[in-house]
Length: 101
Image 1 (spheres, helix red, strand yellow):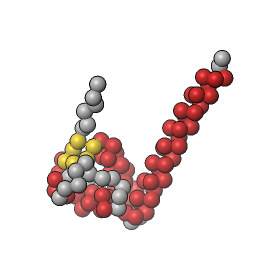
Image 2 (cartoon, rainbow, N blue to C red):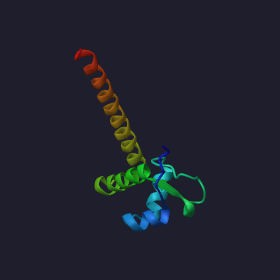
Image 3 (cartoon, helix red, strand yellow):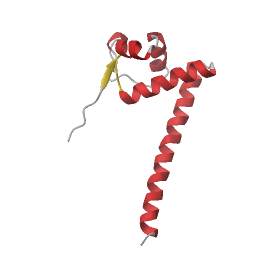
Image 4 (cartoon, rainbow, N blue to C red):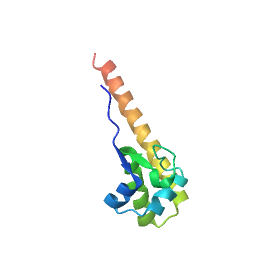
């Protein structure tokens, strides 16, 4: 079964989440997320994972009053932590399978 990718345009994202387009452009320019097609910014579309990170980046930028480069670093660290957490949980499951028998 093929999963359907849910996408949202730059304009829809700005309207739904009340995010200024220049913030999203800064987020993309700093490598926090990538649009699905790297066309002109007015034609950008984002998947749901990117929308999650865009919203998180905007909150970090506003709440901590830090620049976009610092936000990009924080997002990268959060993503690394999340990945390590998933790996840890996977290995714990594997270990439980061997120790239960």
